[in-house]
Length: 172
Image (tube, rainbow, N blue to C red; front, side, top):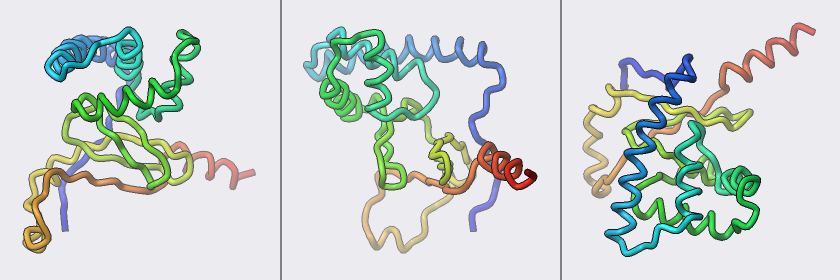
């Protein structure tokens, strides 16, 4: 049994988070330019805008949501461009594809080692940091199955917001 502490990303001060995001966005932008150059991929205006949109959010957006957000500012952007660009970013290691509940694909710009809590009701995805779990050795049986390249824990449950809504509905 794995024990230890874990915590969810919860930033009460949105201004502080915004400042941190801008710092990391600048670093990620430099990484984007470098990796596109090394891969021989042209950094187009549309790719740059998709990347900026990804860096400006703290949620785990789908390609459709990214498209909807961008289409308001850039009406000529095509949904196919968004899907292809996200696939390219995933291949370059700039984002991670999350296949949540085997129902849809979301994109995660947080490349730090972390896991996810998925609300079964509202489908919200929250980052979880669990250093004790990450340090644990895998069971020997895993070695008999094959080589592990990465591991990711997805915890399913009901988030506090949904629990509160249910509690309020039951009181009326």
